[in-house]
Image 1 (cartoon, rainbow, N blue to C red):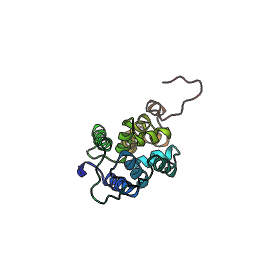
Image 2 (image 1 turned 45 degrees about the vertical axis):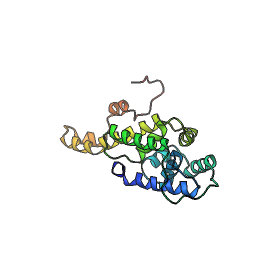
Image 3 (image 1 turned 90 degrees about the horizontal axis):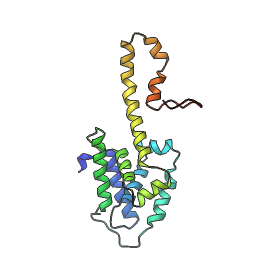
Image 4 (image 1 turned 180 degrees about the horizontal axis):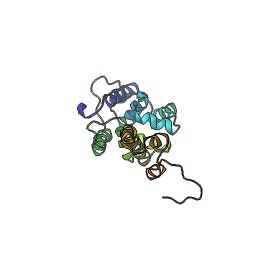
Length: 189
């Protein structure tokens, strides 16, 4: 299963297990995975949280308040994943495949948690006004930026108007991909 996930996701899962142990739980749930993701502090999911002005520490505090420390015995051996956590990991890999990636990264894991529609992790994300549509749109924008980034340079050198291409931008194209702010009174194109 490790080969299906990036090093970042493997670190997130390691941190999730550490969080479960720290909180005295005998399992690793989606809430622990979300804690691990928040404590990783890198990747596309963190860029998304930053772009939406969401404080990691606030989210971490909310999760910890909801799950509370268990007074149970400390587990040092293998901590099993809950069914929901297993489903989140499977869905993250499926999401990566559907987006043309062979390895699931943190953004796929984040999206899989939002698609779960139940559980502590989902409730916390919903409280912070995050939903799967927002994350999916953000991922699509990132892919479009990557696609239009370097190939544009190649196109402009073959263009009949390279100087114009360099010093201007195609507002019709930007409108179609949703990158142009709407103007008051202008109908949606």
